[in-house]
Image (cartoon, rainbow, N blue to C red):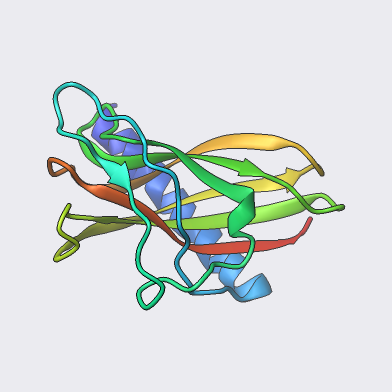
Length: 151
């Protein structure tokens, strides 16, 4: 099976998780500020950006999410590596939405999701969100939604 086909199949599973999580718990739609990431040599500086207050009110549970990488995946698609830390006192499930934009914020490349189930208090998980679209030089990664609910 080709890498792109495997990624498409994985993305379809993620979409199903997104639908179930949204129905089960609802979600917040406010964007978050995240930390810039290093870029690979072949693609100029993809980064995570801090939108202005008018663009981006705080996302619920944003303190639990950190973008640790913002670079194309092995298929060349826009992707972000995300570290999710459960800062609550109970095991929790997370669904994180990441938006990928051009460097000038004029065009959205795509949206990706990452999820983790039954994350224990204080525990961390590293996940990847992908836009399933070709990366553009200097693209930006921004957490735009976080849903957390008790496991």
